[in-house]
Image (cartoon, rainbow, N blue to C red):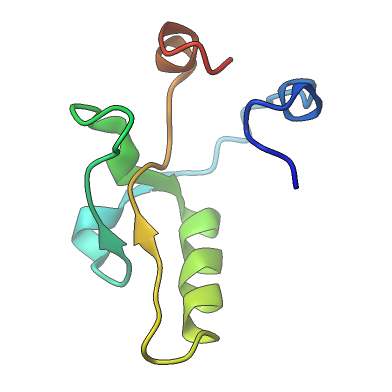
Length: 86
């Protein structure tokens, strides 16, 4: 299992693809809540449209008693550096 802080993950180049973001608070198909690590972070409300669609699809394959709880999505680069995650 790889953690987000693993050097292999950090070595993956980041490229902007221009895909639009959606505000998951407006979609309401996945439960959202505050990040335990960064409770005042407001960036977690946004996901790339395709990422959100794939999460909704994956959630639909789970048993009806289970679902995802999203507490963090998009993090801009400056926040990633600020929190020591990049």
